[in-house]
Image (cartoon, rainbow, N blue to C red; front, side, top):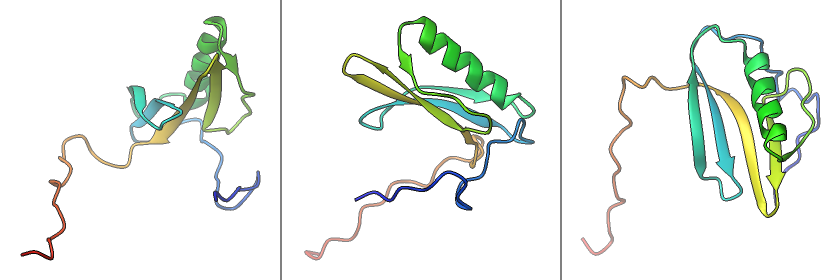
Length: 109
């Protein structure tokens, strides 16, 4: 069962207007698959970019959730489809490849 984090919780910080590092605008579907992503350069006005995305989805006929100041994401729904449109701080450098996948050792040797 998922835990609900109340608005204003110390675990959730409001989105700043700008970051000194790259950020990502990421769109994921109800299964958690990333269907679109966009790298936002350092210094991009994140509030403006999220508002533009919100307006674009509404204009395309999606029912969009409310967008409040400091919010990192919103939900858009159309028919049976549900998307999460979110801005995330870029935590890894694209210049550094991810570690290789390793399979856990088998007990069969």
